[in-house]
Image 1 (cartoon, helix red, strand yellow):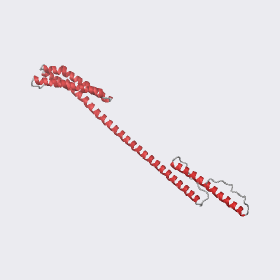
Image 2 (cartoon, rainbow, N blue to C red):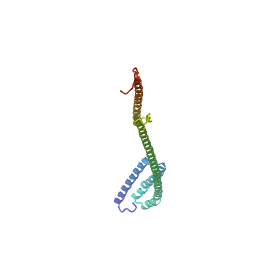
Image 3 (cartoon, rainbow, N blue to C red):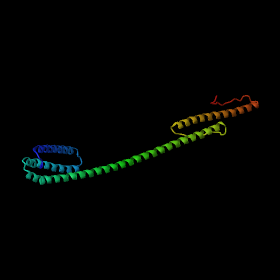
Image 4 (cartoon, rainbow, N blue to C red):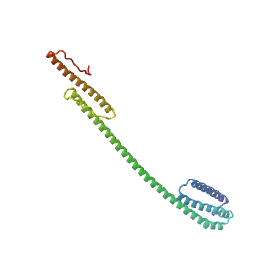
Length: 231
């Protein structure tokens, strides 16, 4: 404005100053509503206050001096009051930028630490889940293997009993509530039923032999006095 060569050029600069002040005020209102950090808010208020005073001096003293073509007065205002106000405003803005940068770094470091901690707990929980799953799988496999082995022992004992290699058949010792338990229960029932039937057959044969021996001695009054389950 001090070195404008024509009134037309001065008017263009006046319009630009008005638009600049409007843009700054709009920006200040936006940050006033959206800046939540207390420390930054205080620094921001100082910067805004110095900027408002700068434009007040500019509009009330400097521009009127320019319009009156009082160049010495305008120069004095620019070098003294406006110069000091600009330096003060620049200082507050620099402080605000520095504080904002430090706050951003703090938030970034805190987020990185939380992310690292979150990853640690994620990996830890995953590891615990895998270990628990593995232990459960091993327990299930062990139970299945143990049940199969008990079934095998029980069936072998039963077959030995059927082949008259032993006089009794061992029951399968599985008391679980799963399919193996139901299978063992059914097999044990049939083992007991078969063992009972074979015992009755043995007693019948023994009594038959005894009666036939009496017949040989001439006693024809003997009868079989036993009932059997098998037909």
